[in-house]
Image (cartoon, rainbow, N blue to C red; front, side):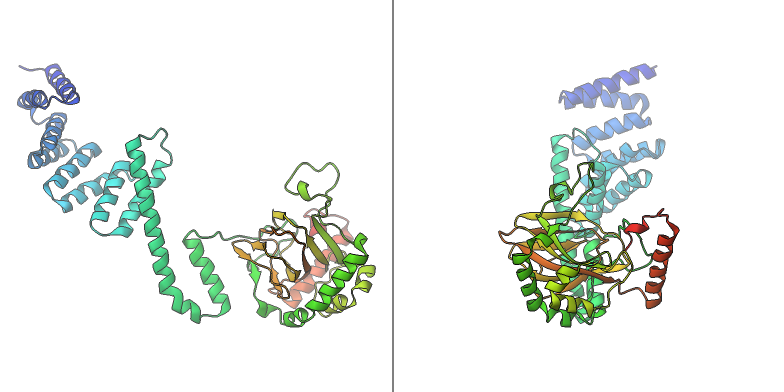
Length: 430
């Protein structure tokens, strides 16, 4: 009577014959093993693999199916059964076997890959892309990937990219008419929603180094409707620009480096601009205090600022200054102090090659066209031209604050000052 050892030797011999490409020898050894114990799942699987290689898909399916009944839940047997059914042209059966594999283990790489192929062949490209995304996620953790698998992964990556682009085009097209008919607020918000969903941009949040006022909209650029006085300000652009030019030509000492770090500050992103006029500032108002000599030299600018509803907070606001950015200079990404204010830019001198990004939106300055933004959302600026760029910058209250809230904030800062303490960085909060 044959022993378990005899069966094991037959299976080892069959495996060696298969490795050596000796199909007839492998078949003979496996048939002998089947005579000894044809109900053993390992024996049936080995004989099924030989049948699969020989193109006898019906026999292979019977053997794999019987092996699974003897040893339920074995994923390798399910994968082999799927292959046999594919060979027979039984697409529904193949799909059932592959789905049985991932019902046991969602992270079965080959099952996910074959499901992607199955749905792609079936014309269900979105479902195929879903399985390929699963594959790509798992493949990210595989070290020393075999070249053949690497090629398949790259194929899947290209397919996913194509499907993503197709989805984006369909979504943009499907929404185009409705978006065009919407108001400005809805267009901007829906645009950001779709772009974030499609991975075309990030949604940035407030990062306040001082006071963060909760529950205000974290909008990168405020809409002009909040600032009905902007057209009147823009109408003064030529006069304001002329005053700046005259001031810069005759009183250059009033222009100082915008970045002035304390001595001993460790190397950081501001070091390249520290105490340099690459980014210069000429202040008309600073931390709520007027700079009389500059205001006297710029009476039209002073009048324009005085007409605005600015955020008067003793020792903190408003601030207003001419911002000078020299050629080939970049201001690194950074965030501001408090979201209780809006920052206004009135571009005065803007050569080609200048740009400004707030969060996920980049704009080009246009001379004489003002805009408002939330500087507690990451922003950066650059001047890639060979000429000076100049912008008038000042702050006003965040338009989403009520008058009562503005008054409460002034009271809060006054109480903080009176206390002599600064546990929450309130000194930086104006």
